[in-house]
Image (cartoon, rainbow, N blue to C red; front, side, top):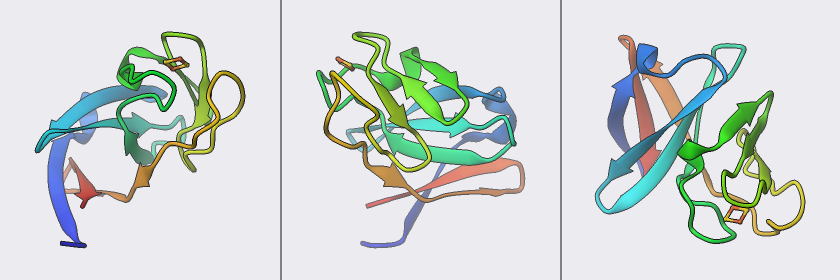
Length: 105
Ligand code: FES
């Protein structure tokens, strides 16, 4: 399946510059709302040690892992420095009718 859009949450459920956890079909995602009111999704677990990124801190384009303060750009998934070196996977997101949808595999 290559275009499997799933409803994740209400758009209003995420504050600006914040992140929530979303579990679907055994997979964990992190869904972000930027300061510009755009939405993004990545894998929910840090690529360093499988910690939930939704417990971390959003600053500008960055999600900071709560465990060892590893940083990723949540818009591109790019790992931004030690101890994280493996990029995060990102997923397409759309907002329709006040709801956030994520395109999962
Ligand atoms: S678990 Fe995320 S930086 Fe170590």
